[in-house]
Length: 559
Ligand code: AMP
Image (tube, rainbow, N blue to C red):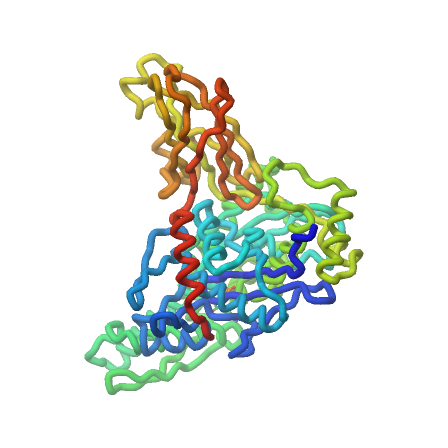
């Protein structure tokens, strides 16, 4: 128990804004304000000032107007992808840029709490797959943090929302429209559990898309009114400023019904009038897309719990993410699903606060375990007492809100490619005899474990290649064509003893952890030897993570 963390931090690493929260001395989640702006949210924008110096937050956002080439924003949309940026001779990945945001948050938290920030829980959209989850975890490691949990944002929001609730079992639909991503997730909450039942969403749909529509409209109107010769779209500085203005106007249109926007460009000026109605019309298709995902989530729910009326199963609808403040969201959901009464619940901060609760809870439940065993009541009580003492908290209070066990799901099926060697003639057409053995199905409760017996193909084979596949479309199928190889999702099982005949069995055990991360173990049953595994679903290797961590630790991150 001596290694239990004494502080519990939760981080909402958002596309547009990030938030850090911790469990305060009263056992409640509190949000840490940014030291320079005093705000509870930190803009997830990084300005590369010079070698060894970066600025994160509001100021970086402002500097983007003047130095658009030295600023990176919306990096969350690139998580798990192979993108690179270069500044002052240093190459940055999405993971290392996210690490700079995390580093700033952690430093703010350390200053305010007077405690070092080490063990953290970071949230991800429920719609993130394995690769994006691993990338998020690596971002934490690069920032010098120990990521004790990766938790889906809607779970964190539900956890925060649920604290004061009754013990009665409820089914909650979380509609989470943030700055850059959208998820809809169904969660069942009861006295001692929170289970994610199903999830759907889009990594490329969020508040910024509403901003972009408004920007397009303002430019078109300005050009029509002024007949300006130069194309405003070609002026990066003007466009950056306009984007900021548009976001501001969009937020205001959530409470007022019209706004005039004065614009000046190319020696001309004009005032463009925008009403909420106009804004809702020009973004109606974006909202419809979120409703389409909501429908699909309900269809998945219907299949999972065998009901004809999935919408009728929903007891509560929780709106989270800053963009769910747009009045059209609530109106559309009420119209489409009569009987639903969507509630807006602390949309900007609930996720980070829930993550801090999750951090505390995970210390009790030890969610890193992948064997599916939960601690028994006695063990839990001992842990609660020890953690309460280490964190200087009242054990009863701690037990009251940390008693729930949580399970989650992945949005898509994952598997490995195998060859059907039972059918004669397979050697002549390996491709045609290949299929995907799924390790985990979409919306299947995690953790999950699959034991596979792979076989060697040729005599004296010394290694076996493992390639991870992900379901490509909406339907799960074993056909190769219905799955796509996960980039950076392959590796080798090596160390097979010499002289094995063809078709020697290799026992492979694959687990997908509660967090949706893959672990592989293998052995050769005749020799009893554990084999060496290099299967890792991530863009960055461990070595690259270590090297990025060294780079980031040498950078001063101001806000
Ligand atoms: P999040 O990722 O949850 O921090 O969401 C931030 C997003 O919410 C940004 O796109 C903001 O522009 C948007 N947002 C915040 N407040 C409002 C509001 N009052 N009306 C509309 N959008 C908002």
